[in-house]
Image 1: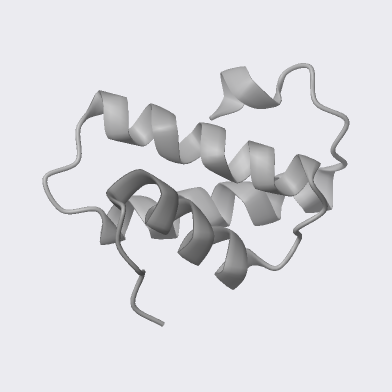
Image 2: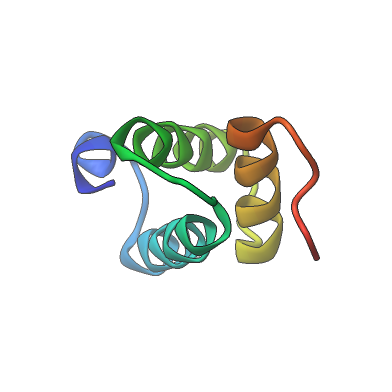
Length: 73
């Protein structure tokens, strides 16, 4: 996750939200591996670049992108 945030224009508070969403998303992914973790991080950063800042929506949408199925609320 930190590698993806290196060149991004996010402040410390925004980075904390993204990291929290990432950590929560990892817990949701069953059978996760390095590829899934990388895809999750990329999805969160992309969603944040598009303006999403709510940690719950970030997690839910990113997990849906990676898993291909709706995330539990």
